[in-house]
Image 1 (cartoon, rainbow, N blue to C red):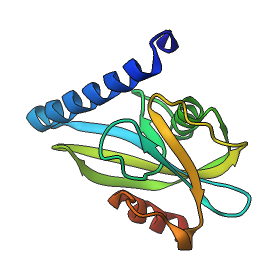
Image 2: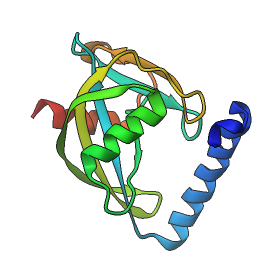
Image 3: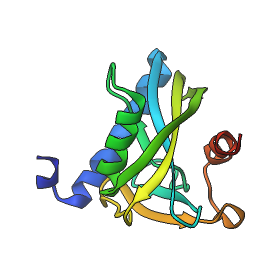
Length: 153
């Protein structure tokens, strides 16, 4: 159904929804839960994406979790939705308790191998590339280093 909306309009709606969500969370606070996915390829590189909304920084794919949703199921669903690609052998590395626009964010960090070549949906995610850990790009989100520390523990 959502793909009946032209991609440029869909991206604009994501930007609007992001702004409204930020304002709402700043006003009411609360708690949100989501997952971040550290997907790797056969060479050990990690996948970073750029979203169509927000800061445009390179970050890990992921997203919100539905109420009562299993962490690994949420990570696999988000990965498939955003990148049209599967996640092999997902593993839950742990949960971070972070501040997110005035709310408490429980960020579940998951890792696994990308099953195929990630293809951005060009709606929520507009760019996706694998990077070697020693050759990360400029403009990486501040959350990337925190999550990567969980991978190397």
